[in-house]
Length: 174
Image 1 (cartoon, rainbow, N blue to C red):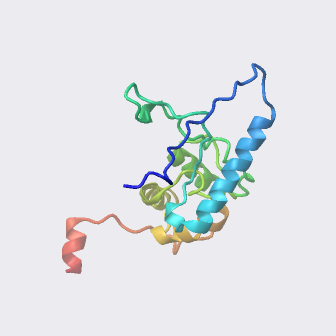
Image 2: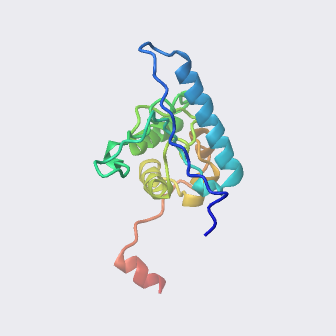
């Protein structure tokens, strides 16, 4: 095996950090997150684009050098739900349901369910809770095509929600 062109990678040099606060660090982290998210949106299918990115000084490691997953911070979606407030009772109920299911303090009518950390399993639970609470017929694809409260509020066919499936109902259909 020829070794003439091979050079092992040099370990990164550590730069001593000043013992002061760095106010520009937050802005740099925000621009890095925006750039990484834009790159992911350009090069990955929509379902693979991460909903949250966390900037870390360094990865937490276990004693044997592997990434310590339990030591990773949870993504913070709490600051994301800051859109306009609800304008009517239906939007107020939807904002409350979004926030409860996502585990965040509040959701505005412009906040995207999936950008706040929602995923397909939570979407199923949300649609079920909307059906039960508002008494409307709503399909899961409706949430994917209208992921904000403002877009979803006018959605819902009829005033009656789908009846819960029972053995008698299923037998009469067959």
